[in-house]
Image (cartoon, rainbow over all chains, first blue to last red; front, side, top):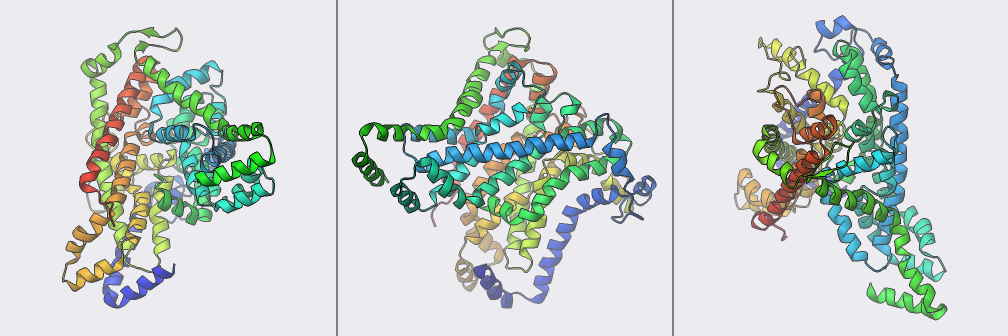
Length: 291
Length: 311
């Protein structure tokens, strides 16, 4: 922060006020172009049907109309309340599973000595590069034989088995940065590896655990492919699948309701964005996550 | 590290017998157990199984029937849709990735000039990246580029009558390219972090020597940024190869119009889950895995000629 301020001060005399203004004008114009579609969707969801066509480009509805939300919410044979509940259950379980299983594995890799550790660590890194297509079909066959299709198990159980190796890698990096003297001291006091993991490593790692939790939530909430394959019964649909079903049915004609439901499916992600923006951006900048 | 573990081992050996120490040694596996089970059951096993399945015909109902290399032979010699989907995917990757990275770098450089309000701009530009993968955004995109969509309404202000971009096979893919470029926020954040690492005095020295801003970009910024560029290029390319949701939503799962948005992953999905040709789809999956592996290997081999790791 201080270096940022210093470079800003050092730069200021060199650049004229006009150049500064030009940069801000350019950035503002770019932000407007980027965000206009999102704002347009938001405002269209509050417009009357005829408003959408006569004042299509305007971002200001002539008056706020929540009717589209009412029409959309009950627009399918199964309501969006069910879809949102399903999505929330899956996302929360995925978060719990990922944080637990990945932190356990990461602790073993970062802090414990055991035979074959290097071998398994190399394999774990190898799975980071493996596209999911390589495992897709046999996994489906496996879950089909377990009779798990049309349940949330194929979407949730892999998280409890640390299938998202990326987060293991992220946590290993973080755990390695914690001072080893703490472990040594605890061991002197008679703590076993479990106590050290639970009482020392986890409490000191809230930033990385929170990053993993938030990204897991957002990615699971947004996931479309896995629910598309595994959930066929409308009562088990997630919000993303419900929205897709809505597109194919009434959404074709009812523009406003489609936008209203689209806005609602974005709300949880937006909430995380507003509250944990710094954590998200730092997560991207330091680990290079793809989105 | 080795010394520390020997020391602690010695301390334990002094405190107790040898047996508990050995148990403690293996106790790492208890922590590793969930991952290990997942790795064997969900990654290693299925990877090998899909390789085996790719040499069979398998419709989920009967048992897999061994057909030798017939699936691969058909993919490369008798499957026009395979080549179409490959062409669509390569075109998408070749357009989306360079433009996205160029935008990301350009905006990151503007943001790196020590301007006020940096966190606000950075967050605003990042927002589309965060939202972009969801169905809602694909829905929005359909409505922007539809015949009576937002884009044509804007063009209408200038008296231009635009086509329906989504239902025209010549333009449909470009709407997906635009969607990908719109999400330049996360590579931008990574570029920004990289730009911050470049010492300011290098630019000051270059200015004193009379180097123009363009020359400074080509001689200082770009070479020092190549590790970050390399990283972004690999991540974004692999991600683009795997793109699925937007094409699925925009074409209603068909890859249309006239297969113009038939991404490789979409074709794979259709073969596997619409036609239940699991053996053939496994072969398609392995072709994709090999394409991505070749691309990655090629990138890493080429890196030593253009990526500067010294500082």
